[in-house]
Image (cartoon, rainbow, N blue to C red):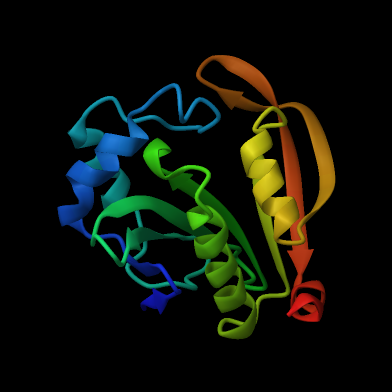
Amino acid sequence: MQLITKRLKLRPTLKGDKAAIFEYRSDSETNRFQGWIPQSPDDIDLFISKLSYEPNQPGSWFQIMIIEKKTGQIIGDLGMHFSDDLKQAEVGCTLNKIYHGKGFATEALSKVVDYLFNELDKHRVFASVHPQNSSSINLLERLGFRKEAHFVESYYNNGIWEDDVIYAILKCEWNATL
């Protein structure tokens, strides 16, 4: 599976991506809203070993790398979690901070959402976001996602109970915007 946009190549995560992933995922300030921040490159090995090698497997996470075509650099990753009934998928995106604010996350997520709806025939795509993560919320709203729920202290993260906000979009809503 490979997806191409104007500026990006999206392809499955490989073991050889370990150093690049560690570089941007270990930045605790940039990734303060993430549920997982690796402490060593070995954490990345474990992360990669738990991923599905194929998209659309029930209950699995499938992770793709976001690569800038112009430079060939890995600039982030985007995860897809497939529900057991395979009619819904959760998405999450992590981008190296030096690439923030340049439209790369919008471009990558837009391509993946379109793939989920129009290639894999998903009914609903959603994202779980920390309510203070305004950058991710703005990204989701820009793509037409709507806020569906705000769960109070429902997510236990690094010893602290945190709120969780769910944003989602249906296939019919996505295709109406095209």
